[in-house]
Image (cartoon, rainbow, N blue to C red):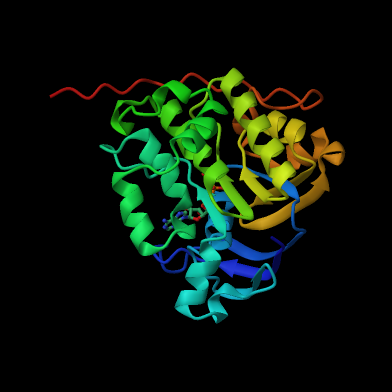
Length: 278
Ligand SMILES: Nc1ncnc2c1ncn2[C@@H]1O[C@H](COP(=O)(O)OP(=O)(O)OP(=O)(O)O)[C@@H](O)[C@H]1O
C-alpha cells in the first residue's frame, strides 16, 4: 500500500491544551512494498505516526492518503474496510488474557471473515496448522494451546508479531517490536518480518529504539524529532553526525545501540536513592 503524507499535523485528543502537536507538519511518501524504520528520541512522535497511519488518530491538518484514499473522507463502512487492510502491532499487544494463543493469533484474520465466521472462529479455531506455522516463525510453536496470561512478556510480544503473518493486510505498522525480546530473538523476529513483507509485497513501517538493528534490517530510515522530520535517508547514508543531531540531549537513548563512529555518551552521574518509609 502506498502512503502519502503532506504537511500532516496530529494532536492527541487527551493532550494538554496549548501543548505542541505530536506531529507537526510531516511530509512523507512511501511506495507500495517499501520498508522503513522510524527512529528518534522518546516523545519524537513515532507511535503517533503509526496511529495516524492506522486511522486510529485523525489528522488535525494536512493531507493523508493510504493507497490513494483519504481515510477520513470515506464513510464509516469504507474506512472500516480500509482498516481491515492495515495491521497495527502495538508495543504491548492487546491479547485477551484468558484466550488460547491459537485463537489470539487467528484473530488477525477477522477483518477478512463474515460476522458469522468471526463468531465461530472465536470458539472453533479454523486453521490450526496456519496458526502453528506463524507461531513457529517466532519460535512459539509449542505455545499453540497455552493461555495468553501464562506467557512471558517476550512471548506475548512474539504472539503479537505472529499475528502479522496471518493478517489480510498490505500495510504492517509495527511499534517497537523488540522492546521485550532478547538479542537473538530480536534478530530472528526482524528477519521474519522484513523477509515475509518483502515476499508478499507488504509495505512495512516499524518504529525502533535500536538504531543498529534499524540500520542493519531496513533500506530506508526516517528520523523524527519533536514531531518533525529530521531526515529521510537510505540506511547507508545515515552517519554518526545525523544520529548525533537526532539524539542531541537524548544521547543516553543511543546507549548500546549506536553504530561505530558515534561518540560514546558521557556516563550518567550517580543519582541519590530516595527511600520511602512508612
Ligand atoms: N495518549 C496520549 N495523550 C496525550 N498525549 C500523548 C498521548 N500519547 C502520546 N502523547 C504525546 O505525543 C507526543 C509524541 O508521543 P509518541 O508516543 O508518539 O512518541 P514516541 O516517539 O513514540 O515515544 P517513545 O519512544 O517514548 O514511545 C509526546 O509529546 C507525548 O507526550
